[in-house]
Length: 329
Image (cartoon, rainbow, N blue to C red; front, side, top):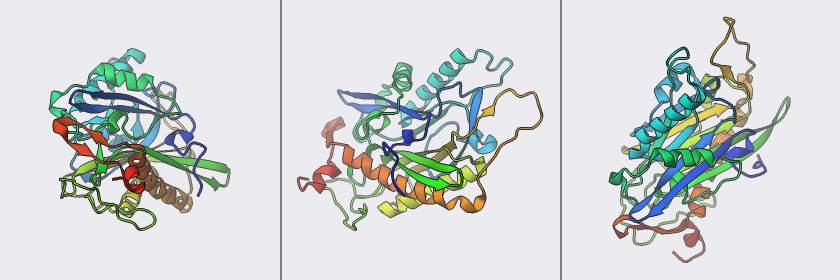
């Protein structure tokens, strides 16, 4: 399989990503927003599903996605104590677009997911604001940065600097070329466990981390028509990409994979009792399984290679994998 044109999740048509990055004083944090399409997502929901690989996390919105199989807001990624702020921002956004919410249209299910950036950032300051979330949403585009940006600003991975990373794959099905793209918030792994594709096992110098800790959030987008059950199967295969890297999903790790398709939309209001939809034949789904494993592995590596070394809260620091590869760590 080959990467898409940009090797990004935004190679899937309609998907956009934006960041709001905070690097000041003791703060190394932010928001990352993923917009599945440019329309009114509350009125035009999309099929989605999540797989909780290890559940040591504080995300919001996953329960309803598990039950109903649809996504009805943009996705926000942030730090653990930014979840409530992200929820409020998404609710305000949807209320502004859809004043009928909780009157004639039902309530809205905001989706916010998190990793703990407390090693490099003063997470207890609870510094992120709704304005920061709105800035990430407003910045969403098909071209976006990786590494120390948005929700990835304070992340660590395998003792190195982690962050936001992405990758994509294109493949052929009966009706032509399709795309699957993955974005990760990489904040997991035990130093020394990282395994590169060529078999090398980098170990950061002078690290004080001896255990596996942290989390990873994986967001998978595709334009292949799938139902939510199939999307859950795709989301589950992201764990194969993590395993290739040397991850074992430690006790204190919140590892969550969410997958959605942009191939069709589920209207909030319908006149009839039935909705017609077309989905992929089950025995053709291996192409997506392979793509999600490859893109998850590559997205984590792209996050780490894109992230320069960082010093943050209390003088703590994380070296860069890129420097290690260049022989300067």
